[in-house]
Amino acid sequence: MTVKQMRAFLAVAQTLSFAAACERLHLSQSALSLTIKGLEEGLGGRLFSRNTRNVALTPEGESLLPLARRLIADWDNTEDELRQRFTLQRGRVTVAAMPSFAGNLLPPILKIFRARYPQVNVTVHDLINEQVLEMVRDRQVELGVAFEPAEETSLAFTPLYLDRFIAVVPADSPLAHVADVDWKTLLQHPFITLQRPSTVRVMLEEHLGALQMKLPVALESHQLATVGKMVANGLGVSAVPALCAGQMEEAGAHCITLHGPVIERPIGVLTKPGHELSAAAQVLFDIFCDEAAKGRFPL
Image (cartoon, rainbow, N blue to C red):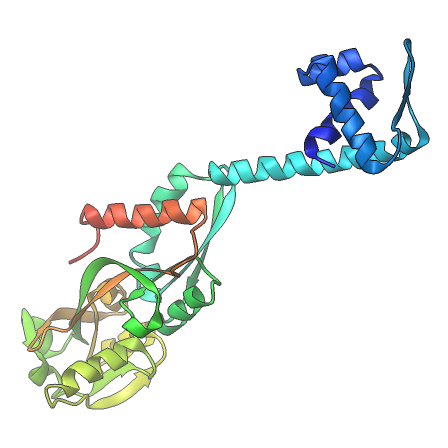
């Protein structure tokens, strides 16, 4: 049975007139008759009894009628839903992002998206960098925002901007009154950082290790917010991506430029190669790229 045959059957069954059904379907009498004949031959028997004056449903036609109504209703609903998803009148898009990005730069992006497509639902998973990669890899989300991954992750990475590490010090520290600080000076103080396997922690250790420098870790935490609070309370100093500067300032800490060396790494959008994005995810991806091209992300 085809959708065309079902629609023809319903038109004749509801009007009990081939002429009226032809007008409803915009078909010729011969085309409609051939469609009904093909349906009856495919099913193995007559669905209508007809003579020169009347058309009536056979018992088999009567049993098919409620099923045909339901099938066509389901088909139309599915067709309508997919059309609305393709035109972004409805749908859902899921994104995983590092907490620092999710809490700082993602909301303005989502504001643009929601202003254009208010009927599309957005789900955001704010996770550590490693979990963002995992969710994209496992197709639990369509888009991820994270640091550029190693090549062996086999994920597609579209850079948005280059983020660099800044120093975080207590507001009453002598360091808070200088414009910038080098790593050698910063590391003379107790250091507060994220616990392994945080990408931030690994990046710092790899870059400094190459220069024969070591983090004097005094305190560790899983959350950047906690790191900020510890620094604000005078327990030590830290270094975080510039993306987190606002979060550190809100915690009561002070941020300054960090150099010697400058440690930086691209942040961008992750997708899984070979898997086409939904219409909603593609539009959100395009907004990310457009905003990056306009320089809306910090350098």
